Image 1 (cartoon, rainbow, N blue to C red):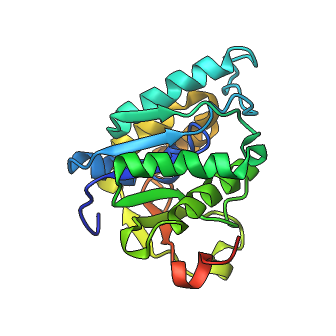
Image 2 (image 1 turned 180 degrees about the vertical axis):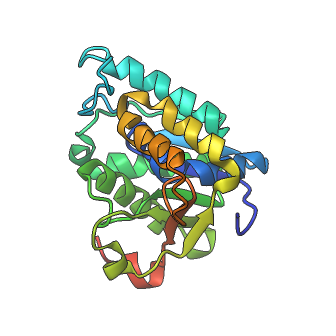
Length: 231
């Protein structure tokens, strides 16, 4: 369950479905607790490789489909403030660094979040993921220390535990299973394979202690240790 109440949460990810995989259960718990959540999604994931399973999208129709999926996911989670930031999928890493920092700074200045959630630099695998979270870190790093929001990062590189240790936050999300499932189902063009696995798992009575639908983990950014001069 949630460790503490928040006044405002800002979530920043580059692709529709990033929120579903990593933090949709946690965000649903916050939403159920009445915490306002803003989700800034930088692209529409229009270059995603998956077109449904079986395929139902085309390369031309995918952007509009993913836009609708993103809204449906937010509806399932309980996010009422969705910002589609208009960048192009698979090109976030090539955006001007200062432009990216200013985009994040404007969001933070407007919303005054107590908590920001994004990916964890150097452990986020995809170039768009890395560019997004590094822009968030740079923006917050410019703030006076006593004014910085807390910052949580989702990390899933193979060497995450080796490099970062065990997660700081491991959140039991079983009480919001339906919200998580709804968020995953919303992104049908991308998540069909996972939903099939989950259905099979439940049919077979799999009681594994930990999976996508039981808990979500994040790392708390430790500014004095990790990010003051790292990039």
